[in-house]
Image (cartoon, rainbow, N blue to C red; front, side):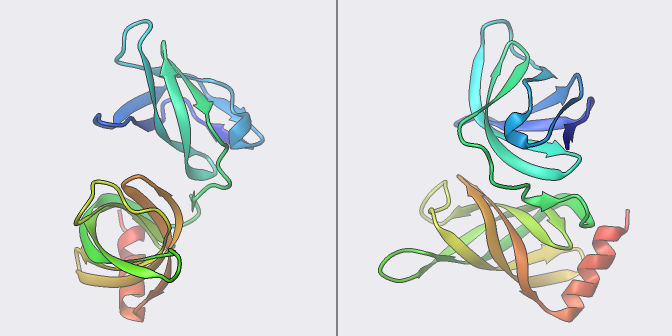
Length: 195
């Protein structure tokens, strides 16, 4: 059962606008994300204003992204259903902003090519991260990123990690760790569990 609790904050990212934080006014539940009923939210918009974008949907099961429409204080799922929850709540996690640079490997034909990426890690956990990245030549990530080698400025120093892409939308990439040094793994575990 997927439950979006009342009082939680959801982020709606519309093209060309700042992310919009929306407070859930009433709990909604369903067996699957695609079956969630419309979600009543506290919206800054007046009657009749419509917004379309990508919603970062936080539920009891974790976090996923869905296409959504906001109209008259109601969020409605639109577009294709997500295939999975991309970051499980079971992993110790820590929000924040940590500078990151690295190289992304693209799955392009006839072979794979590499592109430089830089940006901010906005959410880090013991199993993966959320990177808001901008490559040097574009405001969006190129499609088809398979994995990235990132150097992230963490409070204890530079952390290097290889990240396999789980989900990629515009300038955001969520992934799980394929490799990091044992020392960084221990430091990350301690960092994420300390509050």
